[in-house]
View 1 (cartoon, rainbow, N blue to C red):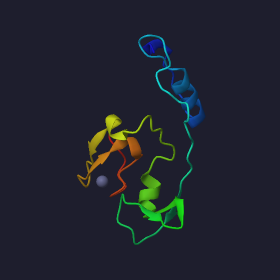
View 2 (tube, helix red, strand yellow):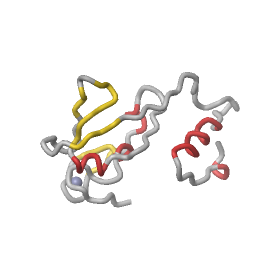
View 3 (tube, rainbow, N blue to C red):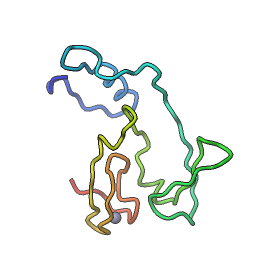
Length: 118
Ligand SMILES: [Zn+2]
């Protein structure tokens, strides 16, 4: 995809449509989306959880518990292209608490709540 075709998208559906239309260098679809799924996880607040951690609900694979700050800090829509999200890691050190985190999953620091600097 050439840079001039990139546009700012604001909704998950728009981003998904953009991904579906991306082509690789030989003009073929850039991503194999056959079998792509949309998973909706439910994250429930639990004040006793440590920051940036999730605990699975053994009775429902789509339910997790997390500290309220963790829930507030997490991105609500995450696209995972392929099996290895670490390939898209955006390593970041919080300017306030100096915890290391991967910005691709957060809108602010899940440890202290500080907004990210650019
Ligand atoms: Zn922090």
